[in-house]
Length: 256
Image (cartoon, rainbow, N blue to C red; front, side, top):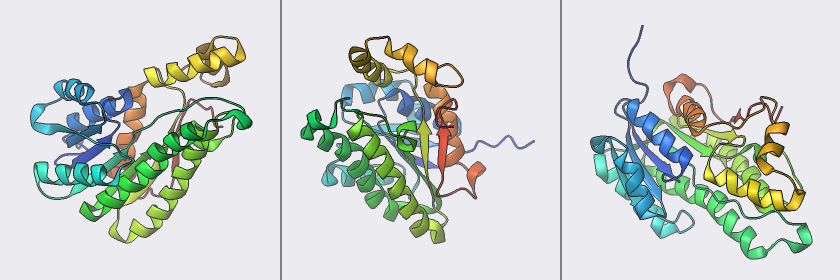
């Protein structure tokens, strides 16, 4: 039996590093031998996240993923922290927006969501790819929303579909360098991000939002951040060495 850790000696950059999925993924990556740079807007939350990790294997830096100079600095800080190139980019930063009819959807909200998910993922890849080692992996955190349409969820669903297009272009461009690029598509997850979505929805549908989602998930429950992290690990590691350009659903069957 090979007991080697799956990310031994790898340098990984995780955006949205202060959120539940970012934290769970960072914890799992470091347990698997990686060195992890956490990136987010909230310095205090980043510090708390880093405090739960091996200090020798983790660091953090603040960045706005929708700002090119900020992204450049975060990527440079990652490469400089441990020397050498970057092996894994997990583009995980996200925001949701609101649920509204098309005629009432606020343009500023649409722009803000698109800036984080699409422009942010694009900028992270633009600046990370030149510093990535051949044979590395890019994982973009899309959503079950990137596989379907729902009324009123205009910004989030549009952005999540757009990330798939970005992933497919990158997968073909980077294949000669053996850099794999995939999207992961979580369903509803037990965290504050999803709860805020459900509370907004509750006011629209007039019933409990969490129960509503559980009823439309074939497995009848929300996922956990740790379950999503395990699937990110698969895409980040040699376990998926011949997997690129794919959409991995981790949604309890919601997109089936």
